[in-house]
Image (cartoon, rainbow, N blue to C red; front, side):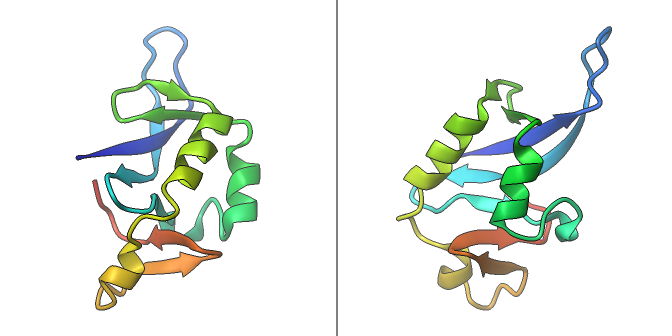
Length: 107
């Protein structure tokens, strides 16, 4: 079982609807898999951390997670299996600075 994480953007103060950008997924036994989003928002970890700094991060159930707690969770999963290493024929997964990224839609 896994948990997807998103960024909330453009939240309506009245109805609470918002746009969301898929940030990635945490799955048991695996490194966190980041969604690359065609490089639209970040190209590497440094850019990602800067971009996320003032964003609202939430899980797929809508529960918010702090920036600090999000990165602690990602760090705690670094010893897990890496999709780009375990599935080398999957040309959509790649490694940036030791982190697993994918550039295809996944849930």
